[in-house]
Amino acid sequence: MKNVGFEHLHLHSHFSLLDGFGDPAEYAKRATEIGQKFVCISDHGMMAAIPPQIRACDKYGVSPIFACELYLNPEQMELKPGEVTGLYAKQLDEEAKLRLRKSYHLLAIAYNDVGYSNLVTLSSWAWTKGFYYKPRINYEILQEHREGIIFSSACYNGEIGQAFDRGGPAEAMKMIHRYQEIFGEFYLEIMLLDFDKQKPYDAFLIDAHRETGLPLVLTNDCHYAFEKDSYMQQLMLMIQTNKTLAEIEEKKAMAEKDGVLADLFELQDTNLWMKSEDELNQKWEQDYSDIIPYEYFVQAKLNTVAICEKAAGVELDRSVKLPTLPNDKEEFRKAIMRGFEVRQLPKTQQYLDRIKEEYSLICEKEFASYFLLTKMMTDEARRYWDEKTGGYGEYAVGPARGSGAGSLACYCLGITDVDPVKHDLLFSRFLSPARGGKTLKLRFDEAEVL
Image (cartoon, rainbow, N blue to C red; front, side):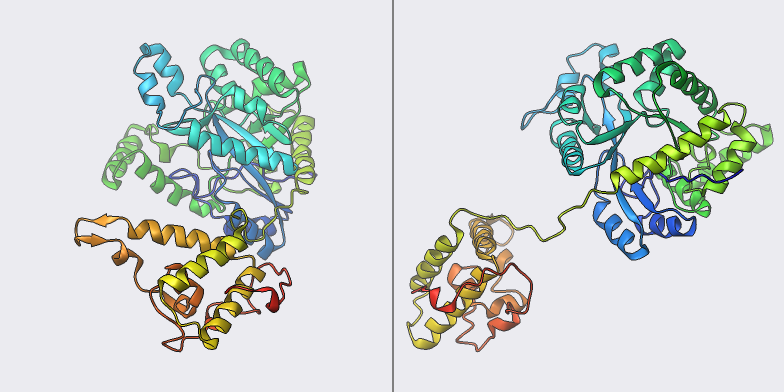
């Protein structure tokens, strides 16, 4: 079979806790080995893999695609601070509790900056306002933040797959029409797995494609980068299902004796590695050519490339972000002046020149807010009474740490308790013009501190 192009859109890293085993760097390395140009990590409910994903893609010369396999429950309420879904669930009957407990999968891929922002919002909302066993969203927040995102039906645990499981094609088609109302267009996700329900589900999705015209996309629901990692994935699932190695070996032996597969997670699908297009072609020819017509198989692969090319334009601002307080430079100056008086420092030329130098450079680097926020934290720590030591939080704060002891500004603010001038400590070991930070070209003579 001739290769037409294929890119993986459904990868789980170890940030999909106790479910994904793959590492972002391994996925990026594997992508180069199988001739792919993109790495799309779609962890369950979170986007924590993005920093290592970006670093790995930079290292191996591939492009990152930002995605998330969201958890969805239509009945999940928006929680207010202090509220928990579990308390609400106690008021429900058993059937309603089961509906609320279920978390459906939905693959979401950002294809522009707005989409990335919306994807981050959805993931954050799920953790802070929709958590119930898992971080979840509902239809309302999904509709509000769907712009710039490509959606796919995900695996058999998606809402369409579960509708198919409950009520067959008729029930699943109702869910597809519901999704069309929400998204307009979305992708029907077919897979070439050994999971026993995958073939009838794929056959339904092919029929749904013919009926609705919704595009198909091929994924492999990868949970590890290399085929050899299947065993490690199995061990991890043992931890998740609270089974010991002894129990597993016993059930394996019984299964082999009886000539049947044991009903264990680790004996389920072992095809979840990051396959090459050749490997997928072979799997299709071997097991799925009678389920998925050739022309649909080809188009589903081509759609993965088109999605990646569309989503590759998302460029994140990777500069260091520091919170900024209003009028921070003036507030920083006032705080230094107060500290100078409280510490009863001598107004000699040595002290005055030193504090002017530090103030000027700190402001030039846009660190004034950072120093003020650090002061807030150390002040709060010192107000905390420690019953074990019988004292306040100065035990936690300490006199100073590392090169920070060389800052007279830190001493004036109460961040440290070491006078660097008295002890002949250099500020340049802590901060210097050559080190990072934003430059505002603040002239030294404008730094009128005292």
